[in-house]
Image (cartoon, rainbow, N blue to C red; front, side, top):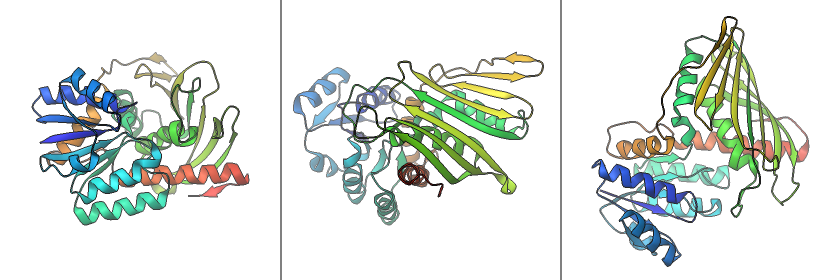
Length: 317
């Protein structure tokens, strides 16, 4: 069984690196690097000892290629995922799943018709800090949850942009809050704008999630590419305490009335865990940790947030 990585100009390089480790664990036979830039494809293949190709359609025609990891620009996700699914390949596509919800829904139908898996690259679901926080949330250690706050800031990314901060940064926290709480987003109100680019580069969002027993929980998400300091943090505030998650160090602090506790939760690279789950799901040994429905819901929240920002109205999801 082989996996193809489509697009290695950015994040796709990390997938090739991780897959080279998984190949060493005998989970896959080989990796094929696919990129329209021949020199880039050759360089990556030589670095990690893999095959390479510039012809995506040719690679999709290979019977021993079971799945494709798509790390091309967002505007190409729909086309590239559709081609892979119609060729009988399983797909892991980087977030956002597609440019629009309608495109994502069409991919879902194609995947169903071809009985193929589609995972979305929400790799932070695989963070040990997020897994730990999900466990303490469901153990009721923090009591009833009042609000969840998330903050992502940094300088403008040194790469070409095809979406703004909502679909690039905030989408992670939209999904993580849903993953931790098993809640569903119901309403969103967003304010923001563009300082340095045509796309929005700062946003503040208020999202209401419906939890079990119709309990409503509020969340505040801030994201920008303007602040000159990188922050990736989430705070879960409950009646019994607060959990502070640092997603740069993948650590957690618990603040309660008897002091501050920082558990030793260990570390596994989230991307390694994500790609391994994708492979094991293709082999039928595990269930996909992230489904196409997860990608669709997060994308819908993003669309409604953009509409809210444009219209200055609360939008129902």
